[in-house]
Image (tube, rainbow, N blue to C red; front, side, top):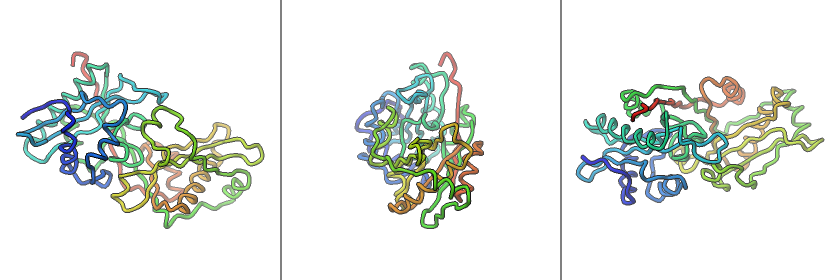
Length: 320
């Protein structure tokens, strides 16, 4: 059995391993070398020294991909925040010891470059890889049904550090919230599509193709002031699994002096109406299980929870 760093010829092996690992709702099943190159290897911060392969007589039986989180200003990497983006294992009796060895290699790589803790899967914007391939509108933690990965992490000292709820709305059945408050907002504010705007951060430039985004801004009609913004991202190629042209809500903000007035509900509802008219069939919203504000918004707009993920974390030994 051989453990080594990534080589260019490994891409087909990784794609085969990806398909063998597990068949999950939130995991793109059609991964091929072209897609892997575009969504993983082409990232400016990809380091082949952080991706390790486990081979048995030339057959890939495991893979781990370690890297670093994104700085809070979204303008670069934060090397103190280690991140393991993927752990892939082929079925077999050796999967447990292979997982242990691969996790150790990933952790050693991260510690060598200054990381003091490691998170698995990350939580946006701490997720620099695999967006569009795993998780959904954001790449977050480990899907709850991905039991093999969760068991491997728990067996190697990782602790659950929260969970994320994934909600879907199939827009064929969508109806806007109509009440007195929402009608008054519609008279005083207008929602404009500003999708042609350029990426605002380095992270957006790395992760989002401008053509795959739809951005809406809420403006007061009288003053022209922008008081809120909602942004969606086309979840490709993952949405192919579900047979819908799907988008994920990735940003929702309202200026402080206009909060708690129903503007967020209006923005999301009106933007969903416009997305439905443009042919979008499904929209996803993710939120931390402890975020009661977004949870209440999802319930009000009749989004349905369809999946969840677990966030994992481990503190790295100083002498690793």
